[in-house]
Length: 262
Image (cartoon, rainbow, N blue to C red; front, side, top):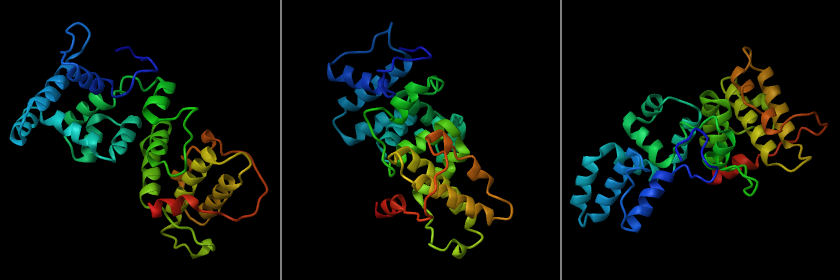
């Protein structure tokens, strides 16, 4: 259970599941098989389950403040952003500063809900269990959580910054690209590279959109005096957007419309 390459059937939140199962069946952790993280987690959740008033629950949270903060983080709908930065191999201290939290809270989050730090080299396990990519689950272009984790894992924090930026505040692209102000050109080009890579992963065979988006990004970068080096780091080819096709320059933007509608 604790090896470098875990069972592919082990969930990333296996400790939290273990604690929940023990409490549900009125059992305690095993001294020979469960580690200290499981023991402390069990004590925390068990104490909460035994508390019959809000003030008692608050006392439990004060006793284990970092663990309690980790539980709050996991209940947040945007907890996948934290997980993406961890998959980008950012140190715990760096991630903690980014979110304005104590490093101990991030450590607890990892141990209970996202136990991947010791298994980041187990690529297929990470893709299946941490990112959520599998043959039985088709990704769609609006799946911010999965794509941010995917880019983070394969390309690191710099690219993750761009992908998060595109999902949170996507740039619109006018029909006439000369109308884009010079200050916006690098950002628009980066976003188009991201969309090309995502479209390549989701579009059916023969769909011209990935190449069209990539070509448009190249045209925009040509208008930037100093180039747009960060866009070059977007791993478009690694997600299947390669080869040359002769299609019209018509570019559709279903992704940006879907994000804004959401």
